[in-house]
Image 1 (spheres, rainbow, N blue to C red):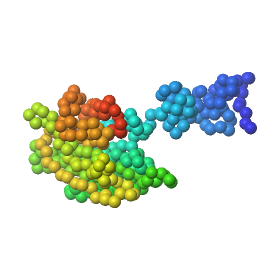
Image 2 (spheres, rainbow, N blue to C red):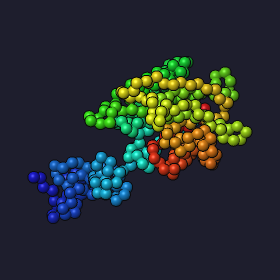
Image 3 (spheres, one colour):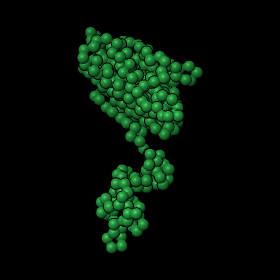
Image 4 (tube, rainbow, N blue to C red):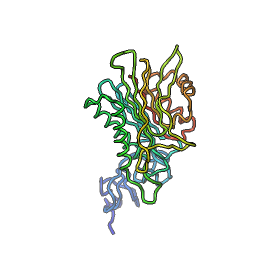
Length: 316
C-alpha cells in the first residue's frame, strides 16, 4: 500500500507538493488524490450548491450533496452577424437535448434547429449531429454554386439523417437516437430588394415563423406544419425513422421582417400565431435579436420550463 509523502508530520500532495491536512484524501489545491498512486489533479469549479471540490463531482453530480451541475449545453448562445441562436436546458430536464447550427454564405442566412426525442437513446447527440450536418451540407452546396435551394435543403436533411442514424444506441436502452429538425435558408430576392425569400424543410414539430409588422402591429406567420398525431410526432430523423423525406415550403415576404426558428420548448406556451404575436408585443423592449431570443427563453422558463428551449433569429 502506498503512503502519503510527508514534510514533518503533514501529508504533501504527490501532484503539486502542497501540504494537506492530516488524513486528507484529496488535495485542496489541485484536486489530486493524496495517495501517490491515486488519480491526478481534477480541475474545475466547485459544486454550485454546497461548494464541494470539483474532485467530488462525478458524472455531472456532486458526490456530497447530489446536486446536478451545469452542463456545457445548459445555456449556449451564438452570434453570426445578422443571425443569432440561443438554447437553454429549461427547469425540468436533466440535460439539453436541443441543438442549433447557424451559418451564412453570401447574402444567404442558414438556420437549423433540432430537438432530440427524450424517449430515445442519446437524443442530445442525435440533435447536435443532425444540426451540424444539415448546416455544413447547406453551406458547402451553396458555396459550390447550387441554385436550387429546395434541392440543397433535401440533401441537407439527408445528411442530417445519416448523422442521426449513426449515433450509437445503448444496449437495453430506449431505442435508436431520434431528433426533429427544421432548416431554413433566408435571403433577399435577387431581382427585387423589397422582397425576401425563405425556403424551409422540416420533420417533426420544431417550427419556423416569419415575423413582421403591418400598420404598426406585430404579425406572425407560421411557415411549418407540425408532424404530430395525438401529441406524438409522426416524422423524425434516426435509425428507426420510416419517412425521412422532408416537407418543403418556399415563401416570398416583404422586406423588413425576420425569421424565427424554435423548438416546442417555446411554442407550447404560445401555440398560435396570435399567441406568439401577443408575446412579441409584450417583449417590445427587446428589439435586438439576441436580447429578444434571451427574453423568449426567459419567458419559457418562467412559464414552467418543462422542456429545453432553442431559438434562432435571422434578420436578412
